[in-house]
Image (tube, rainbow, N blue to C red; front, side, top):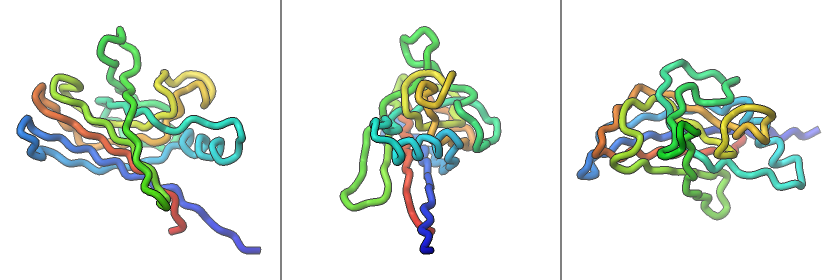
Length: 166
C-alpha cells in the first residue's frame, strides 16, 4: 500500500512599525492547535462547507504555548464591543497552484496599543465556548516576546498555513 503523508505547518510573522514606516520589532511564532487539526479534517471531510480561518486576534498573555489550547489567554476586546472578542477579519492570499494560504491584518495607529504577546487565527469571530463549530475554532496560536505597541505605531500580523509532505 502506498501512503501519502501530509504535513500541516504554520508560520506567524509579527511586525511592529513606527509612524514613519520603519521596522521596530519582528517576531516569528508557530503552533497548530488541536482544534485547528479538527477544523482541517472538517473542511476536507464534509460537503457542508466549513468556513475558512479568517479572523485574527491579539492578546497579551505570556503563558507558554500548548497544542491543546482553544483560545487566547489574554485576548484583547474589540473597540466599541463592551469587552467582546477583538477578532478582526484578515485579508486572504493564496497564489494559484500553491499549497498554502495566508491571512494578514494590520492594527493602525491608535488601536491595540500596549503589550502584545500572543496571536491566534480563528474560524469565527465569536468567543470560544461550546463545540468546535460554535467555538470560534482557533486554528493556531503564536506566542512571542512581548511587543509594546505605542499609540502611533502600526502592528501587522501574518498567519501562513501550508500543506506539504516534508
